[in-house]
Length: 233
Ligand code: SAM
View 1 (cartoon, protein in one colour):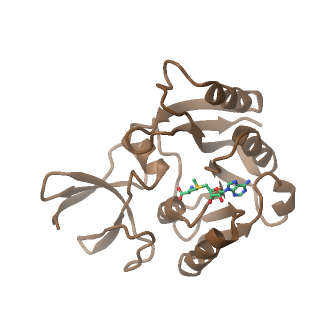
View 2 (spheres, helix red, strand yellow):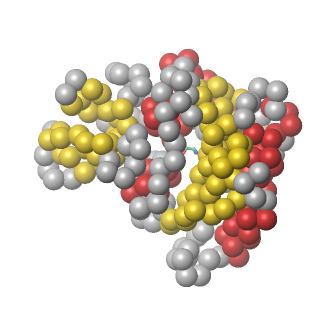
């Protein structure tokens, strides 16, 4: 296994680190909030007495979006985030590293088996708040979620943009950010967006979002693009 040569803060992305390995390859990483603890079999790196977790671009769409040059990484330390479709917490664990113990992730997931793993993760990572619920019914969890700095959505459902907008109306601050993994199969999103993709972006615009950037996730994920937007109340 290749040794670490250096680990440096990413020049462009807040809370993200670049790991340089002996074989010349580079990896993305976050500082491990819970040293010694892995979440999805990722590699741990130690450098100058700090432990980092590799952020795998093939496993996390946000890492793929950063590797493909998203204009900004908007998540900051202490942020509160509503995460729709949190699953077992692969991506959420890296966001958890970035926001630290003063931040919160409200993780919404409707599949009980998957949620069980996320609940176990929340035992270890104290900034995770599991919510077993259907993201299409935000009124059912409005009493447990505060006004948040950002929404992350990856629910892999039709009409995802309107589900996101319904949640934003309840929970997202003015100028809050949205990171949305959107279906954009096999098409160059900058040239010829698919009908589904175009409709989803239109829905976001009609519901108060300003689109900041869209990047396709190829080669890390062939089916999706990441939309980064800001919400204007
Ligand atoms: N974002 C995760 C990550 O990167 O670690 C992966 C999410 S996976 C692609 C999509 C998840 O959304 C699944 O676990 C699925 O059960 C969940 N999901 C789909 N529709 C949902 C809904 N209406 N409400 C809550 N969760 C939903």
